[in-house]
Image 1 (tube, rainbow, N blue to C red):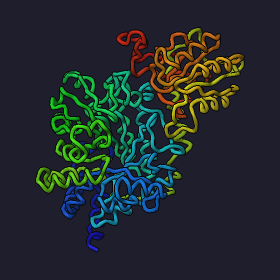
Image 2: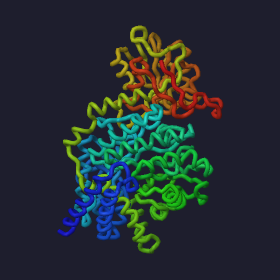
Image 3: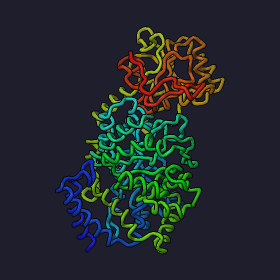
Image 4: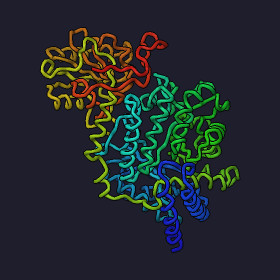
Length: 607
């Protein structure tokens, strides 16, 4: 069994090397650490030399797969895998295509509960380590917290990036990364596509918004770097996204290709600082954006496919030495110009190391193989990227500790201490924007009977119910008596009339709004409630800009998401059991003149 013997040699070498690397990479290592790195790299290069061309190509792909089990998924998931990839299971996917990584999604039925996720992760690692050249897989997911979460309850769910930006505490951002990283690590997920490091300066941005820490480049840089340090201190690879900066777009790159019109100077001032900061913090991986950025590459190729942007700027000017991963290759923003067979080839030629989730793996894999066979991509170029990917795997302990245990899950995931920490952090993020006549906090003696109503958008992972239900339960726990009414994001006139009727006799109304535009149905509902004489408290449960469309409301707060932890914190602020401490991390423009600021960055009231 020569492969097994060689793997033991590799494991012993990489275990020592991995143990010496914490947050930083080789640039931060001391001399004895550099010796370990050199020894590790020699072992990894020997491993690469043993790999076939097929294995090398596969190592660069990170792919979805359906099912809760690596070998025995449900029949519907087998059918989906056969239809999309020509394999039945994750184990068959690994055996056929030699993929180097797997990405978990809720819709792919990968993430039912922590113990199931761990068993799936272990099954995937067994499949990878049973191949002719045994290599552990890098299992990844998008666990940004806030509105983007794949692993839900009973794992600990934290406020998202913009909420943390409102809290303004680097210690809190570092704590989020440390705890979330430890919980992901315990279930076998060693790469997290977080934090979003975009500077969101466009209130109409349809894809970033509250996923960003805010609109101030220096603040975003500080918060992103702190969260990176937290993740990687827990030996979970962190991924900053979306380079070179996706914060000033009005098009969603899932459905089209956004155009960034920043000048080079504006890019240096607005978009670049967070990426410089995370690189200085030792970031393991950086994700590309499917955006056109003419000031950085006049060809108007998507940044994902741009050699000037990825190799010229990210590698050359910023000095980044880690893994570059594409945003998902099934997104329309990268597919239109060249087609699915050419996209992965052009991404590799641009400087990418990991190819994430192409729509048709066979087409993408064969496209790369044809480029290698023709000499368009050299084997040496493949080896460059493979070495970076294997270095990342070694740094995060995959060669020395590929498997996870149920015992570790029970001691780490969703512990009472972690959940309490999430609640405390959330309390520091809730932002009070208006409080006319000291309407808040509500008194449990004088304003006991509440109507809780409003938008109930589809719940992200980590929620135990619709926002109105979560808020109602928390108010009940705090000693109020609540009636809950869901009016949706587009309330009809009949729903508005019913809400006004339900508010009669109530001491106060708490309404959750979800991207309520001026003159829209939600703003009409709020106006009708105020006109009826009700005491109205408005809570923006996604973007904080809603207050501009609601000039008559007496009290208004922003939570930046509708996950349980943020909604419960908002209820406690409204009830006065905690003080509002959040400050706006983005400016709120006026509804009638978006060029004018209604509330500036840093605005936030207290009691």
